[in-house]
Image (cartoon, rainbow, N blue to C red; front, side, top):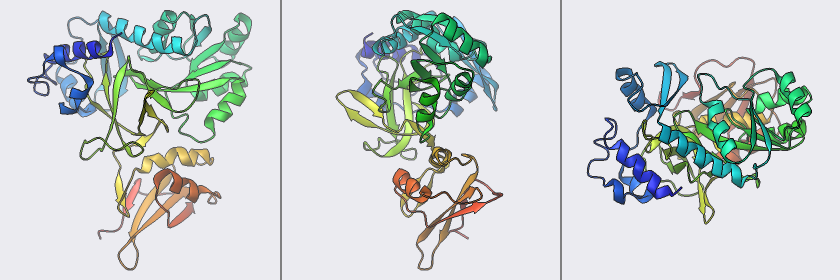
Amino acid sequence: MNRTERLQAVIAAAKDHPLYAERLAGADPGAFTPADLAQVEPVTRDDWVAFLKEHPRPPEGTALVHLTPSPLLGWMPEYLTAGDLEAQAEALGAYFRRLGLAGKRVIVAFSYHVFAGGWLFHEALVRAGATVFPHGPGEAARIAEIAGKFGFDALVSNPSFALKIAEAGGRFELLLAGGEPFTSVPGYRERVERAIGGRALDAYGTSELGIVAAETMDQDGLWEIPEMAVLEVLDPQTLEPVPDGERGELVVTALSRTLMPMIRFRTGDLAIAERSEGGLRLPRGVFGRTDTMVKVKGVKLYPTELAPILAGFGLDPRGFQVVVETKEGGTDALVLRVKAAAVPEGLADAVRRATGLRVDRIEAAEVIEGGLVVDRRFG
């Protein structure tokens, strides 16, 4: 698949879409390149929610529908044409071939009903030359039994369910994981690999985008899948690219979506990008959200990036609070409150390494009241 030609097809389709007509006014699809994306205003999930409230039904040309629960819509639909499905299967099939899955036997334990999960993997694995069993979720013991009896090599699942399958006796050479925080949680991969007796790879995607970044066998972070998407990491306030190695918002242009174009889609997810001859890599994966950003000591802190760090220390990743105060002399003080009986040794250093900020104080508390961020600097 030619990446630029596929992008041009997406741009051509999007020029007629109400969300993009103004954004792409004057754009020439036949001459459009990935470098031209910087001139296109990003789109948000809220933009799509507003549009879909007015236009909820599948448009002409829809071949497949997926739905995702949405607090604003009830169900967030995803519409794909037959061409979109072909592009997605071929693109992800190329990725699975690069992993060496041709000839492997694979159990897919993501849902095939309502949600996109199992569909994102199934057809692409077939294209890659794998033997696929569409089991779906649940029945960990049955999956373990089937895997042993029929000699399945690989499992597609979220990592927490993979652990349940392993507890039931399931062993696999390879786990293709997704659907929840995984490699961003320190020590989680190692725990899962010990349980399944094989290697575990992470992937990132959403129902709107498909799977757009995934690991290689080198396990060195999420790599942009070039046939599936163009990834950018932007400052969530200025929407300008951040330098390599700095945190920002992951913005994605999907190459497998023409009926619901996702051009410069703001995911709200926090990532760091590094570029090399091998492509664009997210070395820490996706590790938080950008919508709770607070500036402390002149540095942007994204509190949700602390969640996987806490999980790595055995703490509740939802049981914490960031408090910003003013010291005598007017400088900022950063306080981290965690739901725990005691503060784990090494936590302050782990936070400093991840964020670049020194925590002035960490407090353990039985109960944490209030929001995620408490800013006491401004009265």
